[in-house]
Amino acid sequence: MTPIWGPPGSTHASVNDFQSTCISSGSEPLPKGIVCQTSDMEMVPLWGPPNGKENNILQKSLLAMPVGIKQKEIVNQIIIKFASSDFTIILFHYDGVVDEWKDLQWSGSALHISAINQTKWWFAKRFLHPDIVAPYKYVFLWDEDLEVENFHPEKYLAIVEREGLEISQPALEPAKSRIHHQITVRSRKGDVHRRMYKFNGGSKCYQNSSAPPCTGWVELMAPVFSRAAWRCAWHMIQSDLIHAWGLDMKLGYCAQGDRSKNVGVVDSEYIVHKGLPTLGWFDEKTVSSERPAANNRYAVRQRSYVESEIFRKRWQKAVSEDNCWSDPYPEPKTNPGQ
Image (tube, rainbow, N blue to C red):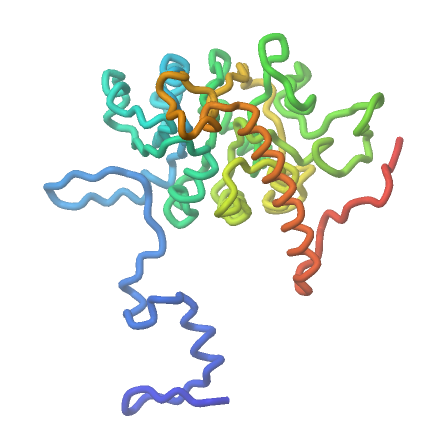
């Protein structure tokens, strides 16, 4: 081992010893105690003595949403529910309109981030780094087209903590919602369900089915992550992909244990998914003729399909190349059947 020589009177240390104790790349020239590992999204006053806030923030959660001015009233109803609870609010303005939200009572205490035509996953990758949101107990990364008349954040989180759900979502009221996967449909039998059953058609789900979307699965429209689950999920979000299609099938790897137990849908606190088209659906008069795809919903969906295939191939390649990683959920070669 190559010795590393310290100041006079110090003992020698090997390269391996140095690397094991100094793992924060880029901060090596600084004394360890000066490095702040985490931060938060709280705004602070410009004057007066700094106030200790660690204990208060550790009891808070975070709601982050992509928003457009056309859904202002829907978003307002959502934020009113969360603003009355202990939440920090972040709005991702994908249409560039920020000033027109200032008349809402809670607007001044929310964080507003603007970037034209970007998805919530683009925003989340760049502004919700795990070290920045580490103090928050839960991260709600929701779409804007949700009705929350029958949803109460405090009750929801009480159920999530009691049930040990690291990744969750509120169930959807089927009579009013746009449903993509049956596992998201509200059950009236209890507070939570963790799997679905489907005996007919394609992609059947039985009692012994162990793969998403039969179990261990939530939709990307209204996911809720524990801080540990978000730290994992954030790393899975691809830096160069923005639609995150395919990510839902892999989120169970971030469940901090058995995905069939730690991932679930909360039935007693439910929402309505309106399924409104947003990105790629703008007023013809406001879109540049030089970029016609900007208002082409079909082109947006095509990009989503392409990205899902890219993500799938990247996952397969990463699995094949990582000799130190063992898949806790190997895919069955055939449908396990009933």
